[in-house]
Image 1 (tube, rainbow over the protein chains, first blue to last red):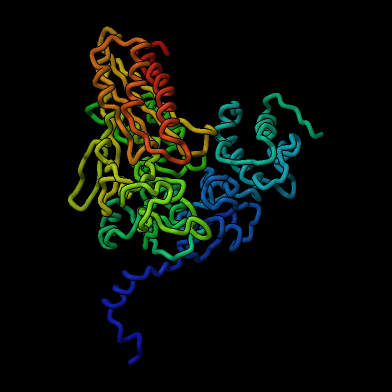
Image 2 (image 1 turned 135 degrees about the vertical axis):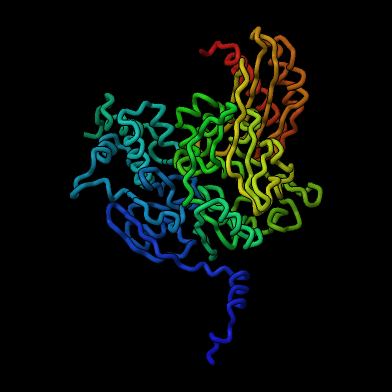
Length: 182
Length: 335
């Protein structure tokens, strides 16, 4: 009789009560239109899966506590913080990261507007800013200044002072802001 | 990242979730938006052995009941609440209070029920206890309150910072709670224990299923203010919710509710001031005096570097403005 056979079902139930196993789960994610089938521990955050498992390092992680917005990705079209989202919670959902914006190596209009306005300095907040702005522009094609500020309020930037970023969103939505860097 | 393993379940109904909570003897936590729970698990203020995800349950949209009250599913996301035409028209104070919570990304996933059930906060408590702040305080089963060492033994002065709770109390809302014995309905106001170690009268096996806002009285006006430093993406230093309703002459106060949140173990009501306003013909001087009285009546806990004196003054000034706004809305001047 092997060791395993001597353990009754009740015993294993008791063991499970004392020590959580954190059993891995099989999940399916659609990241930038690509289907990924992965096995993850429940404690893994979405950003860890995106950066470490899938290898898309455009999404930046900074505060790990949901206070800076650098890790913003679009989950079913909503901007969410991937550092405080469990990967298992996203099973079967569609995720878009900053790598999804450029097409065939050509930057999107929003990314070009960021360059035109000098809205990128150190660049660490930029992927999050871009995703928040994308979500905003998908909701409102011509957002007002107040809507832009509210839409980007969850993203901190220590370099630009924000004005250039707001201008970039105004420029790309065709609201009378001309490029300053070209 | 979270540094320890936990189990994860994803029930399809709230009943299944309560059954799971019962099985795990209260060592599990419910996961809705996770914007409060997961950071707290990261710094290990909370260490549940299991997370019960409510992600598989779709909330019903806010709807009017037959008696005119409005039922809001506790799983309604704050962004959906602030953007809902129906909520903005019928209960604008709740939409406004949802609008000022955290940042945009937080509101996209955070839920109304989760906002009510959030953990209390303190500069010492919500820190990673690895290289500094290593000694556990009362809330972490320690033996001292390090920010306030003079506190009586076992007294925790962490602050309950929900933005929606004061608005719901001012609106006299009720909450439906699903537990082992079925559903019970309690006023939102009676949910708070006044003890930061266990801020809510909610058993570990109970779940807030919905919030019911009773019909708004005629001649109603509201005011809501959240005092912050930056004006976005932060917790309040104080938040103020005022509900006023007038007699048919549109001058005499028929009732008032003044609630101040984020300065104590739970939202506080200025009961004596509310009482003194009823039956009075309202004017600016009277409302200013009421704001002074209320700020004296409310005893804020010093928190996050703000002294008791400063908070009192802050509440005094903003309560004046909020009361005036509420009166103007009740009178119909804002229309």
